[in-house]
Structure formats: structure tokens, C-alpha cells
Amino acid sequence: MLKILTIIGARPQIIKAAALSRAIRNGFAGRIMENILHTGQHYDSNMSQVFFDELGIPQPDYNLHVGSGSHGEQTAKMMAGIEKVLQTEHFDALVVYGDTNSTLAGAVAACKLHVPVVHIEAGLRSFNMTMPEEQNRIVCDHLSSLLFVPTETAMENLRQEGFMDSKAVFANGRGRQIINSGDIMYDNSLYYARIAAERTTVLNDSSLEPECFVLATIHRDNNTDNPHRLTAIFKALLKISEDCTVVLPLHPRTAKLLETNLEKGIHAQLRRSNVRIIPPVSFLEMTTLEQNARMVLTDSGGVQKEAFFFARPCVIMRPETEWKEIVEQGAGIIADADTDNIINAYNLLKNKKLNLKPVFGDGNASAIIVEKMVSFL
Ligand code: UD1
Ligand code: UDP
Image (cartoon, rainbow, N blue to C red; front, side, top):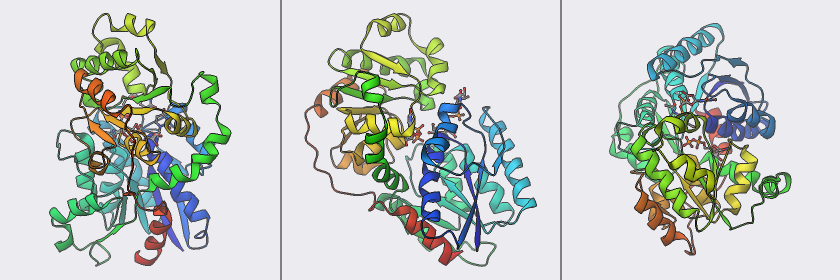
């Protein structure tokens, strides 16, 4: 029996963990035993507990309750907590998702204790070294024994960085394995699309008609922490809302910075506008909103992809994207935090018919991942 410790902490990791836990339950229950450690990076009920309740994820076996803090402080507390768990209980591997501080902490703590690290969503690069996520994912990729990439682009990034010719040997005496599993988020979107449509009432509750609203999310630190960029984004949302209702489930980071970082006058305009700012929604509600939105405007990695899964055009409010196949297929436009660029992208994509090729695998990433873990570890 393979015993793994899965590290989660931020909202998207909790959601991704649902797919892996489901794959273990459905076919690998006798071969993998999973324990879950929640770092506590996200802790508001609508950023954490809601996903456990809604997606049937087993409750965490450990919760470090680390909470918010500076990068160094937060990551250090996580590393210390994860280390303690790894020293008191034996695990054959530690599984991390994506590129958050929880990912970094898990990878560093485990590698130093010679516990093999499995990185899901490996190989992604923005090539923007000012992004905390870029720093985290590069370190994590290098410390990982088993890397699951979601796309061919991610595989190529690792090839370009010499991963395929690497002489790195891990504690078990073996080199790295790199596998294109497809994207684990695609598993979830396929699995929950119908369930979300049946179970949620978010459209009715908010008096939204399909195709008659735009869905927006904003949470990247370089957008929220920079008053000029945050204001530029909100000016674009205000303009777009003259044409179409904008629904904005607001990340707590952004909610906290709106008061200080929005130019004077924008708050009053927002109150009179057709921009509907709502608290973060559950995953099923988000899935329903994405399936029915005319378009998605976002700086989120996950939401960009989910827009693509549901064939919704997407305005990317970042200077670059790790998911370049979305742009290559004409489904997304990189508009950065520039008011005119965002409005122009919205107008260009508004009536565009998308004809998309699948590039994120076939929706069986989690089954591929658990199978490879059993055979490789
Ligand atoms: C983190 C990840 C980011 C990911 C995002 C997903 C890092 C460096 N960043 O960003 O890659 O895209 O999660 O959502 O790991 N807060 C609350 N309640 C919560 C959680 C956060 O109020 O439950 C507020 C706090 O003021 C906190 C701020 O949000 O300081 C930022 O939270 P943090 O987890 O540090 O970073 P995110 O911006 O959420
Ligand atoms: N999400 C959600 N409710 C929301 C906003 C996002 O359930 O109010 C989900 C979304 O569907 C996706 C994930 O959270 O699965 C993306 O997380 P986020 O944008 O916070 O982080 P990123 O993907 O950029 O790391």
C-alpha cells in the first residue's frame, strides 16, 4: 500500500485535490492511502470549507492553521509544520499542486527529509521571475521526483530547461520521471459540469440570464497591490458594464485592497453601475457562472482554463500567460491591466465563434496520475 501525503492550502488546490481523492476512491482504494494536510493558507469558509462540503473531499488529517503573512513568514511556518508531520509519520511520497507558497513549503520540507515529491501541474512557466508563483514552481519542479505536466507546452518548457537530460538522482537512487497526464482541472470541469447545472441556483438567485453577463475575477498581487493597475482594470469593467452585466466574485485579497488602492471616484461609479461585486462563490456556482457567461475576464490561471473548457472567450488581465494554447487558439487575448486593451479585447471577442482543439488531455488526468504513482513510487 502506497501512503501519500497531499498538501493543500489555497482554494484551487483544494478543488484539484477533489479529483485526485475521487480517482483514489474509484479504483485505487486498496493500493493508495491518502492523508491530507491543509496548511491553512486559505481559511475563510468561502475560500476553504465550502469546497470540502460541496465536493466530498475527505477532511484534512492535519491542519496547520498557518493563515496569512509575508512570503517568508508564511512559507517558513508551513515548512516547519509539514516537517513535523513527516518526521512523526512515514509517507512514501508527498503530493503538491501548482505554484503557491503551500506547494513550495511541501516540496522543500519533503525533499530535505528524502520523501519523494510528486508535482501536479509541473512545467508551467510565465518567464516572469517577479511572480511568486514562477519562483515557487521552478523550485518545486527541481525538487520533484515525479512531475505531471498538464500540456505539451509545459513538457517543452522542461525540455528547454534540460530536465530530460538531467543527471539528478533522488534519495531512492532513481532519476526523475516526467509524464504528460493532461490537466487535472479538466477532470473536475467535465465531472461537475452537469452536477453544477442541476444543483445550483446562482443564475436565478442573481437574476442572470445565460449569455447576458460577463464573469470577472481579479486576485494577482501585481494587479491588486498596484493602485494604477487595479484602477485601470476597474475602469475597464465599468465601461464594459454599460454593455453587459459584469459579475465579480471578489477574492478576499482584492476585497481588502479595494478601499485603499482604487482611485477616488471609482467606488461611487461602481455603486451606480452594472458591476455586481459578490463574495467568492462555491466551485459548483463558479462552474455554472462560467458555463453561462458570455465571456470571462480574469487574471486567474485556473479560471482562464475553465473558460476554455467551457468554450468561453477569455480576456487575460495579465502581461503574459502560462496557458499560451488558449491564446494560440484565439480563445483568449492578453490585455494586461490596460483599460483600453481590456475593452478592445472584450469587443473583439464579444461575437467570436470558437472552434477549439482539445489541448488539456482527455479528462482522465487523475486516473493517469494515481496509476503512475503506484507503478513508479
Ligand atoms: C494565493 C497564491 C496564488 C493563487 C491564489 C489562489 C501564493 C504566493 N499565492 O494567492 O498563487 O493564485 O492563492 O486564490 O501562494 N485572505 C483572506 N482570507 C483567506 C485567504 C486570504 O482574507 O481565506 C487575504 C489575506 O489578507 C491575505 C491575502 O488574502 O493576506 C492574500 O492571501 P495569500 O494566500 O497570501 O495569497 P493569495 O493572493 O490568496
Ligand atoms: N473559484 C471558485 N469560486 C470563486 C472563484 C474561483 O470556486 O469565487 C474556483 C475556480 O473555478 C477555479 C479556482 O477557484 O477552479 C481558481 O482559483 P483562483 O482563481 O483563486 O487561483 P489560480 O487558479 O489563479 O491559482
